Image (cartoon, rainbow, N blue to C red; front, side, top):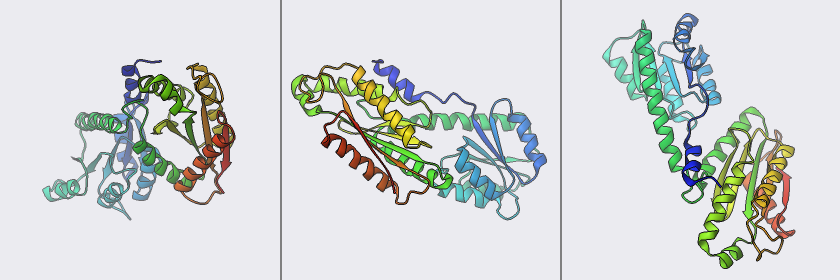
Length: 316
């Protein structure tokens, strides 16, 4: 088992990628100027209209947005207002880039949610410095937010994080038409384990189980959370039934391979898990709550059929 500090550091480490920057301007020449400034340091996305900016912001989750004010159809102020109303984009820092120099325009931009106001013609060194400042602040804020979402015992993500991510991933799956897998996992006969071994060893076992479950997921978007007590949940975006079942089987084997003795178990001499798998397909109806209820029903079925097994279903 990894030391607690190492586990926490793993949860809080920054993603191994360049910062994402979205540049929004209806003039391609202006976009190219900013692209040249940031191409070496950032992954740069581009949009030439307000609608395109909203779509790109939701799909690519940029770390900072450079937003032109004067655009046809939808100006920068309206784009900013809509971004701040959307839970998926409201925390992205927005820097207005505009030819306006008037104080009232700057005040209007800041009032609608922007964090900075840069006037044209731009000075590359100044723009780079300001974007760097807001990227640093964004990283610090993200670390603090992640701390709020970490379970104190296992240092996996907590129930609050799971609830928010489930809502987000359900919405994303609906927009993209891709599947979504959900696993609910229960440690078998854990009350008996605590009765025999004591709660301190029970806590140690839960930490080891959490680490083992996390070790089975292979993609950055997949996430393991402590759902409550001895239950865990795993969200698998863009994953069909076969893929979700593969993850569930890896988890079942990984926990068994921990070889944590459990003589009070009715199914094995070591600690085991049961899992319920539910998958949303592109044609599924219902909502996120229905997917969660289906996974819970499959977990109940796995326990009713003898535990230490995986049961599954597809959402209608």
